[in-house]
Each structure stands twice: as structure tokens, then as C-alpha cells.
Image (cartoon, rainbow, N blue to C red; front, side):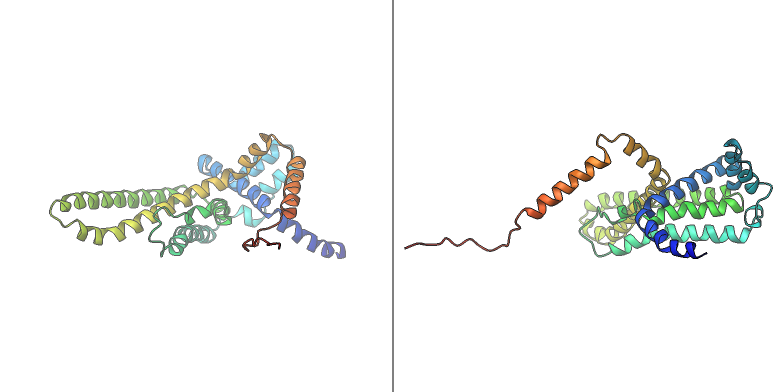
Length: 257
């Protein structure tokens, strides 16, 4: 018991140093189990039991199937509803928060803040919450409803923007284009930024599911070893430290008489 307590600080330190990699691993497994659940209708615990049985780890397979604890063996519609609601709130926050932060950037139509979502823990947490929901029952119908609602909103938004563009072209012939622009431009900016935020959010969630395989592929295709890269970085840092930094003072020539 004392040894376990002494190991807690070291465990916390290892988590701080490697939390991105560990969470990538958790996210990759969660995403794979969710996709399998959507494709086959099997619960994630059943998929894990199948994999454990295939690997020959029978006790683990039995723990996920016949000897599963109540939290895995039983389904809870309440837990599923809470997990799906948390997914909705999280995705809404990923769209709205960058939009709110860039509300004063009137001169930056192509804002970069939504793309900060790429690699964020929030995108990974979405897959973990979907895994919890999939363990409690089928989530296919819920995701289909979300997809239909998103497609409908996108279609109406694009239709509205096209109608505004046509109205602007028509009114420009009668000298009313500035009035239409004054009314429609703020709406168009908000619609564009919301659409950009939604696209960045979807891309971040998809990227979170494949980030670990992409990292492995990137490492396997690297042309420089980790030791060589660290040594090169160390040499460059030492060289930068030895280089005198400019002070900003003007050079005054010294006159000799």
C-alpha cells in the first residue's frame, strides 16, 4: 500500500509528460469501437470480448461477456441520454466559442481560430462520450437524426446566401446595392463563420479518430532518427544562445584625434 502511494507522484508526472499520446491511444480505441458498433450493431464490450478471445486471452474475454460487471452487462437509457447530451453541448461549444472569440475580427473573414480545434482534447472527448453512449444501446438512429438536421440547416443556409447574392445583383442595377449589403452582410458573415466553425469541428473530430495511426505512419516514414533530431535541436539551441542578441542601440563611431 505504501509503495502504491509513493508511486502516485511518478504516475502523475508520466501522465503530464505523455498525456497527449495516451489520450490519442484512448481516442483511437474509442473511435474504432464506435465505428464497429455502428456498422455491426454490437456493443463495444462485445467487440472487446471478440478481440480478447481471438488473442487467446480467455479470462479477459469472459470478463467482457459472461462475467461482465453490471456497468457493462446492463444498459441504461439515462446514461446514454446524458452522454449524447454531453456530445451535443461539447460540439456546440466547439463551434460557438471560437466564433465568440473572433466576434470583433471584422476585417478577418478567413479567421484561423476555429482551426485551433485540430488536435484539441475536446475533439477526442467526443469519441469517448460516443463510446459510453454506444455501450448503453444503439445510437445509429440518434446520429442519423443529427445528420438530417445538420443537412437541413446547411441547405437552408446555402439557399439563403444564394438568395441574398441574387437580390444584391438585382438591386445593384437600381442603386440599392449598398442598402442590401448593409442588411445582408452581417448575416452573411455570421453564416460563413458558423459554417467554417462547423467544418473545422467535424474535421477535428475525424482527425482525432485517426491521429494515432497518422502519428505512427509519420514516425515510420521519417528519414531521421529521434537521437539525431534531438542532437540537431541541441546544437541549434546552443548556437542560438551563443549568438549575440541585437540591443537596438545605434552604433556611434568613435572619433580619434
